[in-house]
Structures are given as structure tokens and as C-alpha cells.
Image 1 (tube, rainbow, N blue to C red):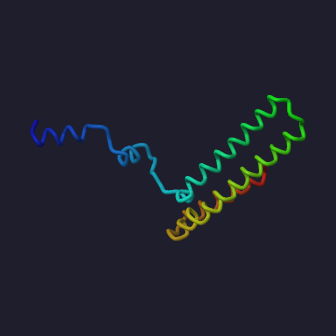
Image 2 (cartoon, helix red, strand yellow):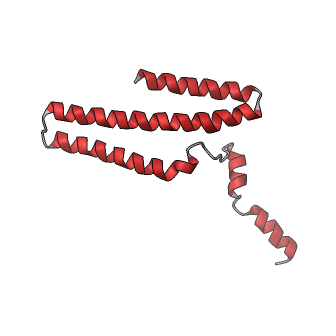
Image 3 (cartoon, one colour):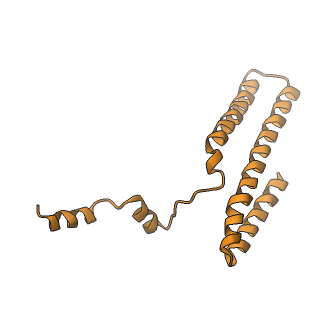
Length: 122
């Protein structure tokens, strides 16, 4: 195989991650939670454990009020996680859009406002 043929073959192989992202319209971005990703995953695993504990409590016919107490704890844990994620979104994504200027800041503020509204409804 000549160098030209090898180059042609290389261009017909599977596209790189960057090319795939461009082809699908998906662009990989670093999100506001990126630096705390491991901490967030650890926290979510703890919350998952709380939810599994609720399942066990129901399976074991635990007293209703005790289950409700644990539901409340799980709900608070998720709310706390959501609030932290929202703060990181504001500090990173919204702040980045403000630096870039234009319509992007309005879109990010509207997006954050809608997220806050969803959180308040729960």
C-alpha cells in the first residue's frame, strides 16, 4: 500500500471523537460540576443507598412514620445535591455566557430560572 493509499484508507476509517461530535451536533463541553464530579458521584451513591434502604424498609413492613422519616431524609439529600449543582451551573455556565455576551447570557439565565422553578415545585 502506498502512502497515498494509506492516507485515503485512514480518512475512510471511523471518524475521531471530534468528527463524530461535529457529525451528530453534540459538542463535548466541560460542565460546572466537572471539578467535583467524583464528590458528586459519591454523594449520589449515598443517596442511592438511602433509596434502597427505603425499599428494604417497605419489604420488611417497617412502621409508616419511620419510612416517611427516611423519605424526608432522601428528599432533603436530593434537594441539597440539586442546589449544589445549580450553584455550580451559575458559577460556571452562566458566568461563561456572561463573558461571551450576546444572546447566550439570556438563554442561560432563562434556563437557570426554569430549573429553579422546577425545584420550587417539588
